[in-house]
Length: 283
Image 1 (cartoon, rainbow, N blue to C red):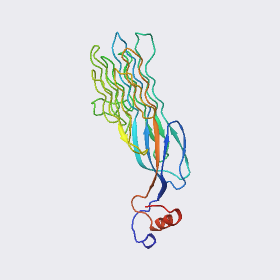
Image 2: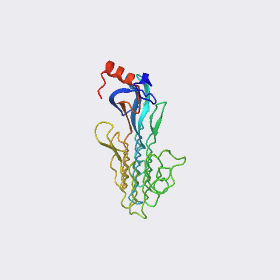
Image 3: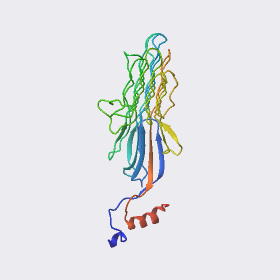
Image 4: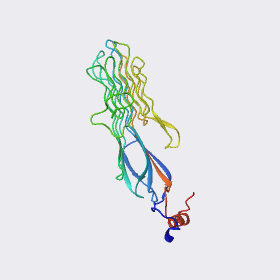
């Protein structure tokens, strides 16, 4: 068509978001740049807390990593406010007396509330204390304590577990490992990049690396069973399970939004000319 510089095809709107990156580490509003039309978004739920172990009854499971989702080319409006919800960290199990056990708390869900494509990443499941307080399901499942199964992260995943009920679709992570028999050791929490290991190994599932924020950061790793190491803030890592001690807290979640400076597919040549003349957009 002559009015489109001789190019035939759908006319796409250029996004001039200047590749602006905003990291939300607490719940609040994000307002886009005036020329933004497309964004890429990373949404990570809060990590689950590790379970509390008991010297008499064994070691506790690690917390599951927060759900992990990264979506490209989300349509948005320019100079428009959007609500970003950041999931809190799950607390490590700590209730009861010195010989008691307790399940870790699940992390909170993170949500990027874009009307064209709302994105939710659920919190990681809490690590198990004992059979009476089993591992939690979640974005990634918590690890099982001695003699108990790990939590799932559905639908059915690489760990061969049935998954959450109802399932999270699409999947956001992996299941936690099962605890070993007797006092041999607990399972690790699942991570976005892999399942938690069964006891006695109990290592947490691998996280997933992402460069959306400018550096290479690993998100949503599972917490180790038997080792109450704290998950770092704002990476969605699961907390470690206690060995006769309280479980560690998980890491809180994060939402990262990159306002894209791009045009994909076929676009209007008049639009390109106007944009280069008026906004001095660098190609």
